[in-house]
Length: 111
Image 1 (cartoon, rainbow, N blue to C red):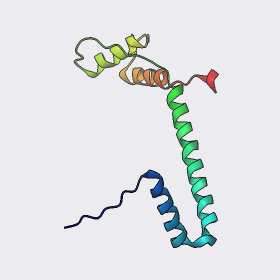
Image 2: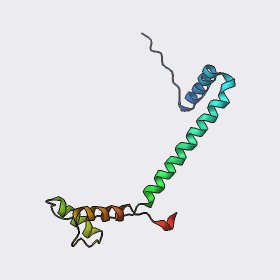
Image 3: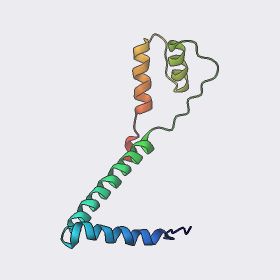
């Protein structure tokens, strides 16, 4: 029994795919498809860069939580301590809002 297989490396696949695209689409539609592919690639790169910039702009905050947290209030107070927020006389909702604004705050100097 003979086994037949193609020993095709990476660059040959690119040529095969390119020829298959030309056969399927024809030479008339190839520039149109290339333009659409270019637009898609450009949008992808633009979106990728925006997401990377948003992640980079997030503050690099290390929350140091030591010990066991028993309830929601203790968790909020522990996070508030890590972020140096005064949590006295504040409700849970107020603490959540302050913590969210402090963690989500962007550095306006980098834009």
